[in-house]
Amino acid sequence: MILNASTIECRRGGKTVLPNVSFALNSGQIMAVTGTNGSGKSTLLRTLAGLNRVTSGQILLKGKEFGSDQSRDHAIWIGSDTPLKPGLTVAENLTFWMAMQGSTPHHDVILKALHRFEIAHLAERLVQTLSSGQKRRALMARLFLTPRDLWLLDEPESALDAQGRHELMAALHEHCGDRGSAIIATHQGDLWQPTFTLALQNGEQASSGFYRMPPSDTLQPKPVSRIGAAAVILATMMRDLRLVRRGRADCLQPVLLFILMILLFPLSLGPDAQTLTPISGGLIMVAAFFAALLPLERIFADDAGDGTLETLLTTPAPLPAYTAGKMLAHWLGGGLPVVLVAPLAALMLGMPVEQCAGVAAAILPATLLFTMIGAAISALVLSAKRGAVLLALLTAPLYIPILIFGAAAIGGAGGTMPLLLLWALCAALVPASPLLAAGCLTLMKD
Image 1 (tube, helix red, strand yellow):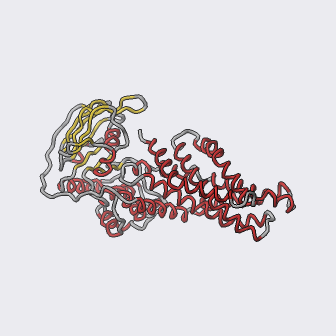
Image 2 (cartoon, helix red, strand yellow):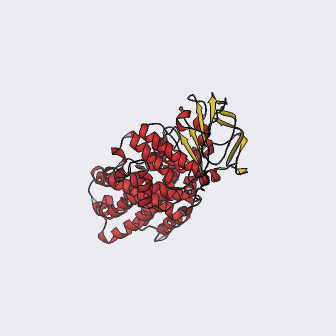
Image 3 (cartoon, helix red, strand yellow):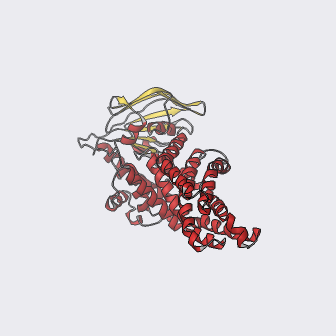
């Protein structure tokens, strides 16, 4: 027996949405979960994928309690969202997901997976140019990137035409013939020729109809259970940098805001060097602060909006490595350009040429700190209403010491001590900030 659920119950928002559901699923079987909207079909799949918690009852996998870690190792979940970035090609999106699922990305493997759904010729097409059905087929290709014992599919017929459903049907029966299993939340139970059907009505288990599946003696390959943090960091960083490169306008906004603020200070205070030079360190740090704050809201919001983050929570990819990759890409796309133009800003404010290198040296750790602190706060307020306002209110007090030390480092006050303090803060936050951000992102569960 592969999976056994005994009187499981789930609650969301104080309301029971899945009361006392029981079933047993063996290797080689397909279970269709049917019912009206709101009956708990998607909640059941999300629970099995580790996204929802069981408030009572028990789920056993091969006799052992089925926890979230086991679900990531043995199951793959495909929900109703489409976690594919429109600005990337199909192959680039699947390369990212192959790394997150625990396999070494390989173009030939991706092409073979796409060929199963007759879209291998679309591998180099941008996702934003595909139809809804083609996007759904590309998403289903994830099933073949890394073997998993259990497939959890939420209304897979959505956006698929008859040919697409036929191809998915063939893949399902091949998977179950290889001793795999599948649970499908659907409004058309008979469409998938299930071994049996679990019917839910307003969150209650109703009845089960049984069908037959051809047996098979072929064994399914063992799934990959763990992947290295370095692979996740690299895959996340490369994906985000590709998006930055193809969305140049978004990339330029922080550095343009930085330059614009530097230009406005001489206009408002006057162009006299004797006025600007003594306060230039503070002016540069304030401009860097606002430039860093501008893109923070979207660091995790885009992934949360298209379902990428939720899908990522069902994979074995370590979440702190993902947040570290996001922070690194965010700094390379926004913080590094500010560091590069900071010496030019110093010249515009009348600082001597020999001090310009010191400006870049002070801005470098400051922008790193802006990214690490801001990303953790951005993850914390991700699901909050008016998150942008909360983000600004929470980050501003934490950025004040960085502004003080950064301005002192640029102005030379206190010798090298302010710069050393900035680097000491960086050393402390490099390991801590990805863990803090990952912990905040897990609050999205339930």
